[in-house]
Image (tube, rainbow, N blue to C red; front, side):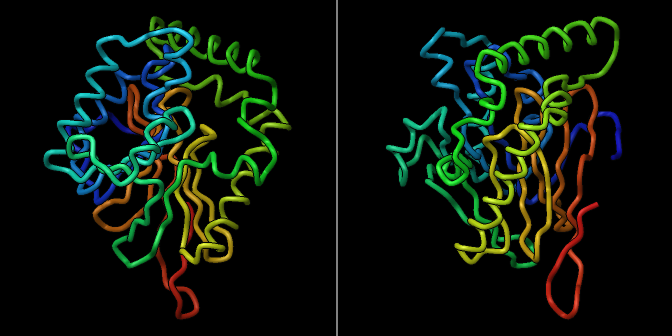
Length: 272
């Protein structure tokens, strides 16, 4: 992992974000707004749960920063191709697949072609819930326990900020150390890889489970861009063709990098 100060500009071929949950008080909108201001990309992919209609239905919460993120995305769509794939928390927008919201294209799923010609299928990931027999990853402890986890995560962030410490996800740390959660994550990732094989693509990109990762399985690459509730992460295809998960908050961290290499005369890859 490399760590550095936040750059003023981050150039890329493509950027993926998901699980922003605008309208939810745990959304890290300020960090996301800084990230969107910095990126300069050809295509921005919104891989679902951008607006949290579930949360808004329970309690309306739409502060200025959330509105600024929303307006920033619309502004970016004037010069950057923006493709939106609704998730389960903003499922209502699936009724508008094939249409545009301003210049934002709405798709049910989409195939991205990397600089070296690989085809990566994009979907939010809730499509796999029935396959792996669990609704939300949060069911590993129950919804109320997950809400408590996010509450603790929120106050951990407040306390660390006041003490001058950088952002750190308590929720992410705990989740990767609970056996049932780890098993659920692994099951989801393997199901996504099988989905990619079934659809004859080179890899798959999704969100949904709030767990950023890149893994490689028999020439299939699985990418999850994470979220802006627990992790403040995105997936980036660099101008050189690397796939990279980056964390953006008080500093920039490169979490994982996917390098394209030649292997036995066929296109393959390695995860660092």
